Amino acid sequence: MARVTLKAVQKIYPLEEGRKARKTDPASSEREKSFQYTDKGFIAVHDFNLDIEDKEFVVLVGPSGCGKSTTLRMIAGLEEITAGELYIGDKLVNEMAAKDRDIAMVFQSYALYPHMTVYDNMAFALKLRRLPKDEIDQAVREAAEILDITEYLRRKPKALSGGQRQRVAIGRAIVRRPQVFLMDEPLSNLDAKLRNQMRAEIIKLRQKVDTTFIYVTHDQVEAMTLGDRIVIMKDGLIQQVGTPQDVFDHPANQFVAGFIGSPQMNFFEVSLDARDDRYFITIDGKEITLCDDMQQVFQASGEKRKEVILGIRPEHISLANESEAHMRAVVDVSEMMGSSIHLHANRDKKPLVAIIPDQGWSHRSSFNFGTSVFFTFDTEVIHLFDKDTGASLLS
Image (cartoon, rainbow, N blue to C red):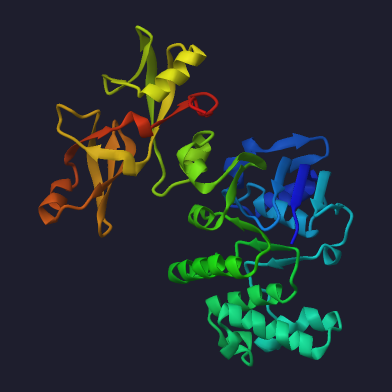
């Protein structure tokens, strides 16, 4: 168990190596303009600062190519650190070999030895340490009990399901009793049902194995359900660090707001104005007075009239009568989701998603393709972002 500290950590790939890395990424051409370059190459991770407390579960989350796995690999010792300092406990480990860092890593691909039984896969690292047989046996069986895989100890990986193999991979890490657990998208190879089950297993595992976890994923649902804190990354930079609830309720910028939450937040261009020292936004020609908390924020900043981005989560949009509505939209698709309906509509040819509680068949039939619908929202739950920088105007 240990604290992990990253101080101004940076990873720069030489230009030729960087080009090869980007060729394997189908989204690379779209992100090319976002890369930061130096005369040494392109920056994969830039000025990464983070203190991870002992026994804390921290999740690094972001889209493909944002630098989260590179950061994890630097912590593991599988990638060299270009600049900055990395501490595990009180030790500076920049130059320390991976095998000496007392960490255990669980990979996306399981990385099990196919010719070995589950027992031997889990015991392998302990045998290399030349531990006594009875100590190895006890460690393996305790880990198997925690993960509910005792009955599979004599099987080989090919006889197991994907979820069972991932349990074995996690068990192999547990038996080492490391200071820090590193997990690199361990659930991404599983189907949706298994991912849900394994997510619950990891939550239970964390309660039984009281140590430091650093978990990487591109799935914001995993991040929100697993982490004590989440670190949202984009293009090698940290966008925001906070508890899942804090990041959801108070996103630092438009990227975080759009990335966290499913379905994602709606964004609309609106104008922000003031009259008689009271602030309001104008959307579809209607003036909407902001709530008291927002009034105080803008009065304190002396904000002037400007074009801004309005953000509203789908669950915060409600149906309204035409006379009371803030917005009008036209239905494209309605998805029945059990207790609610996800309405995909367009407002002035721009997408809008609203989550409407289901009220029966007659209610559903009113959302046919091409139907006009009217929406309202409470200003206490909206978000406003700078149109140019994307930064939140309310933080």
